[in-house]
Image 1 (cartoon, rainbow, N blue to C red):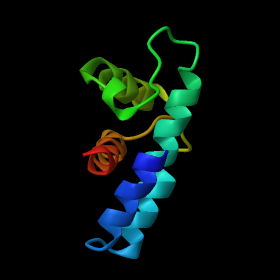
Image 2 (image 1 turned 180 degrees about the horizontal axis):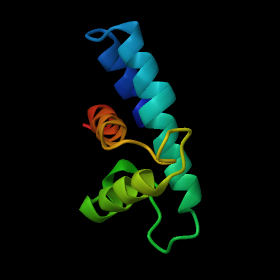
Image 3 (image 1 turned 120 degrees about the vertical axis):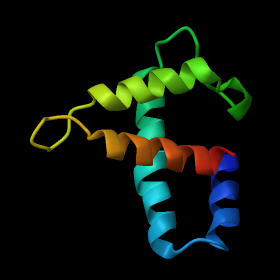
Image 4 (image 1 turned 180 degrees about the vertical axis):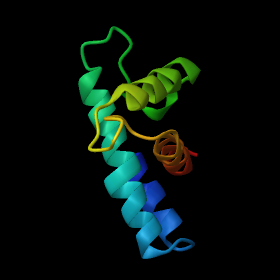
Length: 92
């Protein structure tokens, strides 16, 4: 959590308040919801170095199957892409 807070502070100097709000309320909150949902998984994420391609694939799959208040009942591919890109922005 500290690493994410630091990243958001660094990003804040170059991004709009709306972008920071999306990153925090969208991308970061969904990431933590995913981590909570997968807490019983044998492959737990405790630090940034624990995140690999497999974890990111699981995250995208989780986003794609997450129910949403849309016509289809799921997040759109564009929303999934935005959430993933937002998370990538914070983590890198």
